[in-house]
Length: 428
Ligand code: SAH
Image (cartoon, rainbow, N blue to C red; front, side):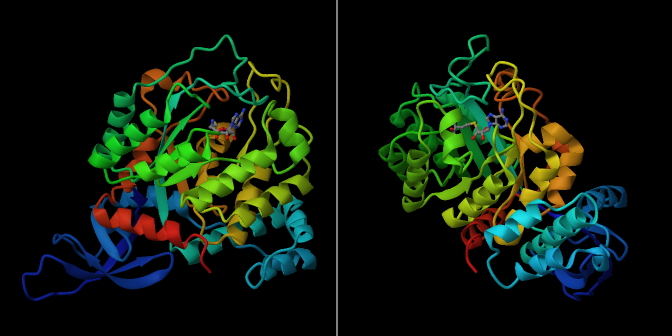
């Protein structure tokens, strides 16, 4: 489901005949242009929502202004106040790969003009390269059981006092069916703890049933299973994986993932890529012992893995974990990483993560979208289970209806556009 953009109608061409489609001229932040309207009742002065050179719906001026306010570009930056080295790095990203030291310098962007310049540059690249193409995706968290013991995660095996649940296969299929066929979602992540109650056959059956009934991209986020499992799920119709490497610092990785290995996780990710999955990957910000240099390496790792989707969020402490007293990752660092990821991978899909929304609320959504992110990921877990998927507490959700109102571009073309964007993500 892709977000449409509001624009004001400047003029309507008199088509003369009784064609159902009309040519109209619209004006938005990028100037005037001629597009096709998919409806007849349209006049100069009206506001429309458009996507991919087609006006898909008429909306009120108030609604248009509300959404424009959320998407408006950042304010103009006075670049004469920028450090010349910093400015050179921002310029260099358009013509060549940034070096590690340069990424580190950007991560050290000071609050104020440097940070504004970095986020603004990412926002401009996003607007120029992706033509304001936003998407809203959904995530269904179908099981909170987990055999792993990750030190930061509230669902870890040793969290005894939490309520755990498993959705039945038919409940999972029906939830996706509702999200796709009623609400218009085109990409759904199915996430769970590493829960082997669901056999390969069960997961494949779920995927097949979904694919029989819905035209949707399915991303699996079910953790470490064998290569064969992932091969079977791919054959059943899964399109992508959401599988973070969490941190590229092996020592940190191994210290917070008892019984797991960084090398094995990366090897599995590479196998998934070979199997033809779209790759959504990323890391956590604010892990114990993590330095700015580590974060630069994390960004370089994302780039070298050729991710189609970048998913980076702040660590949030959970009371039921050994890291309960460790401070949350910083929102400012998350925005810098979002922006740098956009500079390095101009076409990647970068959703605003729920964890950023959780530490910044609705402002986090807007900040993320104006710092290079181009997608939102809404929680579609059925209400009765949602509170029990406690990887961290107080998970943000809100205003989904507001955003969904503009994500109405539900036709087949929207699926095709998404498919194209996903494949283009890493082409130059
Ligand atoms: N079992 C799956 C899904 C894990 S949960 C897997 O291993 O891939 C999805 C993501 O939530 C994790 O990859 C992790 O990055 C994030 N997460 C877990 N605990 C968190 C916390 N306390 N704060 C922020 N993000 C967390």
